[in-house]
Length: 592
Ligand code: GTP
Ligand code: SPV
Ligand code: MN
Image (cartoon, rainbow, N blue to C red; front, side, top):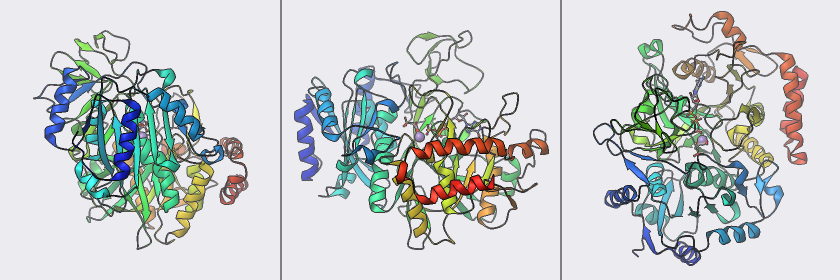
């Protein structure tokens, strides 16, 4: 075994886990293309991945997970803090000792006949003051290949870590992919993650949700920074000035789409451009100048495939044309490529659907791709990747945007009155559930800051942290906070707003508000665009003045009912709920 570090805490932890899971051999991932190529070949050999058409999709592969293992499992995800209160009422909790014992029993000897891969990785550019190191142990080559796209991996990372003890331990064991023994456990106090009996993305790419959100949110509170489920994008105006926006939408609610948006013709002609810094996670901290700065800790996109096409998101599609891993999409046997619902109107007749059965897309009623099928694509493939993507100092944030899927109630856009009101708006976010997690009831649920499944500690303390971070920023320079809803529906159950590229029109208003230009009127819930303030040039046929007015309407009786729901939700947190938020709720009630 060729060991890549002399770090004692790393070596002793790995020794310990080797004696637990008993691999036949141990391979350290050094980050070299040579080693990754060998692993790709091996993975093809054992049938874990399929090499796709080298001419049409160079360097691309297809993988199918187990049929029972296609999304995150929130009901089997635990925050293992010493007390239940630290995890809070919105997390599943298990006492650390109990969890370790249970997980070790499941993991014991589970690598017998298998290889242990040791993946040293950095979340954030190696060496940035934002960045953090992790080591993931896995018995899945698929995980290695995905982590090699999604994070910075290899020897450099260990050299940067030196002999520090500040790194996140991650143990992943596929075991038998048994749903009944599947657990995703975070131990924030120990910087440790253990994931057993899954092979699906968010459950097993431990740098992503487990570390960069659950563990990192806990670290961020201790160390004075924030880990958020947010995209980061830059809008360049015709003068060449770039303003950056972070946006938190729940899973499968449009972050990847917004992050890579292509502006409508009228904007393109004037010289507007959008640059993508990140599509899922933002780590933010105060800069020396009193502004809030953000980096994307990831190095790739783990994006929803269905619905991605040349019209909805050409940049995402372009990102998947080389060196990409597709998971649970349709295999087109005619030309050895891939397909998913919403890619184009030409499904393959000679296909294999996501479960591995023959599938004729021209005849079949059933979907060919799983609704949560995904692509893992390198960020550098994205045609609109920001020049600041690797900037270790991050980008300064002008606006924070919250949003969700709400068929009714939430208007297309509104602005909070100030930071604390903005925290209130984020804390009461509601959204219809999606296919990104297994076993969620259909309907609207509260998903504060889109962090419900990802906050590594008590949500009330997390809101306290948000309020504290805001208070420390220079009030003139703190990001302005907004809420958007692309998903409002009319009486015929049709989306009222065209969405996708046209969301630029709303971002335009948001940026103009930040610069103190665009007009607004004050309502009970916050500032709404004044008549004429949203630019509808080029979509006047689709979006009439009346339709826009109704999308921006604040229905007081619906909002009054909403305050009752908020009250019930807040009651879960008892005395831990920050007074400021209770005050904001009282103000809203008074305004209504
Ligand atoms: P995660 O990766 O799960 O965190 O999700 P995400 O927020 O990045 O989701 P993504 O951008 O992949 O959104 C996926 C779904 O949202 C698809 O069904 C899209 O068609 C839909 N969507 C995205 N933007 C819009 C929009 O502006 N309008 C409408 N109607 N649908 C949208
Ligand atoms: C999400 O569900 O929010 C995702 C996909 O981004 S996963 O990595 O599976 O969590
Ligand atoms: Mn996500």
